[in-house]
Length: 94
Image (cartoon, rainbow, N blue to C red):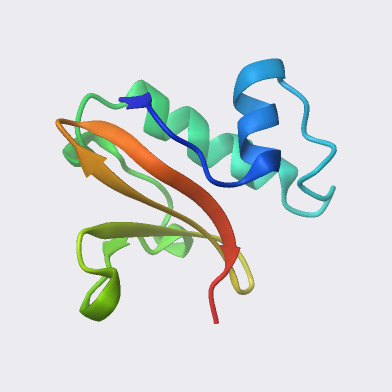
């Protein structure tokens, strides 16, 4: 899948320049692992990770978005359009 838009400055810098300084050393490796799987997959059916990633679709006012756990409260969230990733974000989810 391709990333068409990114909301988080650190994720954007990582994708464009392989620079993870805005992510924090405690989650940078995990974020890289999640992004590697997302970019390699053709569809969400190909996104497979360890059980701790808790890959799932959101509901309510976030309907249409996906969430993948990174660490603690940190999640990578995004929505899909034609199997492209939009609004990619790293957020303190709770």
